[in-house]
Length: 116
Image 1 (cartoon, rainbow, N blue to C red):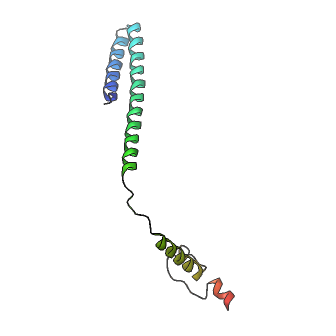
Image 2 (cartoon, helix red, strand yellow):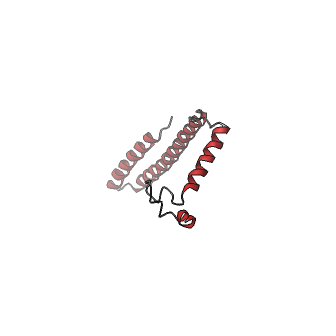
Image 3 (cartoon, rainbow, N blue to C red):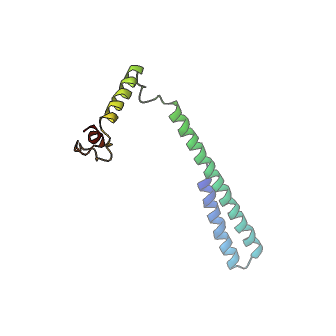
C-alpha cells in the first residue's frame, strides 16, 4: 500500500505551519518546517513513481499470462493467403490506397498500356 497522498497532506500541513512561523517571525522553525515539507514532497513523488511502476509491471504480467486471442493460421492457409495476395498484387499496378478502395478504369493501368 502506498502512502503518498498522506505524505502530500502532511507536506501541506507543514507548509501552513511554515506560514504561521514566518508570520510570528520564528525563522528557525520556519526554515525547518519548509525543508521538512520539501523532503516529504520528494519522498511522496518517489513513492508515487514506485507505485506506478508496480502497477505497470503487474499489468504487463497479467497481459503476458493471457492466451493469444487469435490462433495462428495453419500452414496450408498461410500459403493460400500468400498466393492470393500475390495474385491480387499482380492483377493491377494501382494500389487500393491510391484508388481510395474503388475500382479504377482499366485503361488507366500502366500494365494494360504496355500490354496493348
